[in-house]
Length: 69
Image: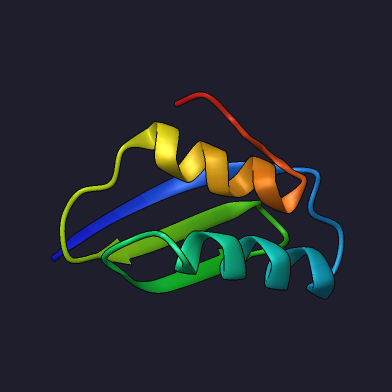
């Protein structure tokens, strides 16, 4: 099990949280996505470590930006 936390900018409401959660959840191996709207923190739990590019692509597909770590 692997867990990583990313920062996403541009989210302002529950719909934003749902969109980001849905897109990241579609990545292979993802078992949980927890989004803190106030801070933009997105914690992803997966069976194996995810590539940042995969997470970035999912976040951008939802219409938001991943902050570089």
